[in-house]
Image (cartoon, rainbow, N blue to C red; front, side):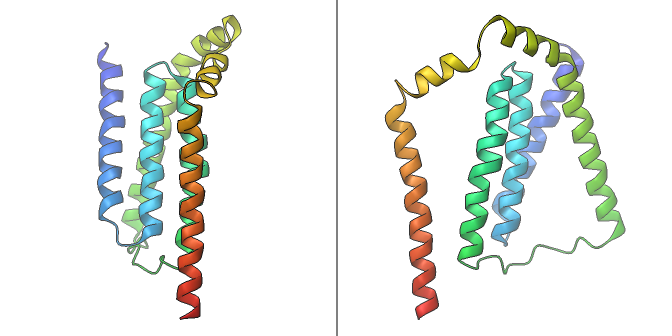
Amino acid sequence: MTTFVRVQFYIFAVLAIAAALCFVTRKSPVAAALWLVNVMFALSGLYVMLDAPFVAAIQVMVYAGAIMVVFVFVVMLLNLGSGEIGDVRSVASRLGAGAVGIALAALVLSVLRDKIPAVENAIAADNVVTPIAASLFTDYLIAFEVTSLVLLVAVVGAVVLAKRRASA
């Protein structure tokens, strides 16, 4: 493992751990959900480094996309977003956030720059999705369906709790 790859790993790992700590220490559920999205993106970068680009893409699309939309929808439905997010109006905090964002984007692009030809060759040589889909819909079908039911029950439960609070 080269020093550059090792540094990238440590950067993604520290970002994931720091974002996870920020996730569990936020008072506002909306801010916590946004920190969880940061954790998902850092984990996606680690998956790319492990030569698993499909898992990285699914991590972003499913967890950072769909699941977080459901979380934020439930938080907004229950009107839990009234906590303090914090004062981000200072110029220094905005510049710091911008610098971290640019550094993270540069890091992700540097990892992807080396991986894109390998990914294109792997996809052209063999279909990457077929073995994952086959195991998902055969070996892990029950777990897949139970997970979807758990998410459905969570949303229905949030609606029921919101109705009780509104009628009381």
